Image (cartoon, rainbow, N blue to C red; front, side, top):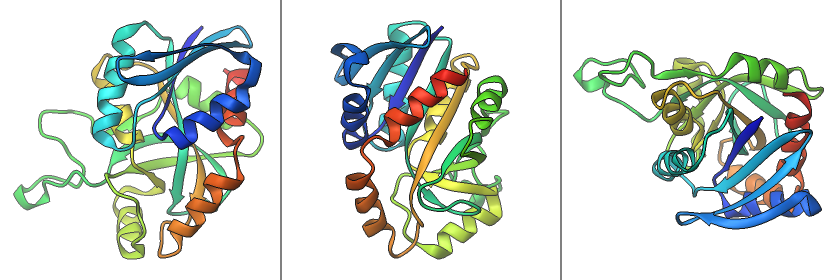
Length: 226
């Protein structure tokens, strides 16, 4: 099977590559984006660093998916805790939604996109169910917005409206691209770095510098189980 792994931040991507060590066989670029190839457990994998935020996520996913054919797309990275998870835990996406898409002033539901039947993007059940079964992994709905979430009131509002467990800056956009390009199987697996409140910045910085094998460990664990 051929899989595409999408990672936003170069500070997540480079430690992931280092953690994979001799498994990495080729390093190159897809358009402007750093990429590398490796094989594990019979799967051929391309990992791409697309940049932080929803615009970079959508562009990066579209460019990477136009360069080759894949059987599935896996996203990983850090995420802030919203409900039912805590720092250090790993959450597998049941669904992804763009929390900051807001046309409620003109009568739309929060997150709802005109002309699209789906705006809460359900993740591929086959991939997600296999990954959820990994010991130590939990699952839930992921929320996305173009900002680093440190506001408890906004965090709690998103929890109430969208029933999300964690918040990041890319998964909703990646899920949207995979859905709109023909329902390409997609799952996001995020490690909780912070509590999405007024101490989130310090917690995130600590996670970034102290857990250097987080994403190589996640990816290898996932590839063993799908």
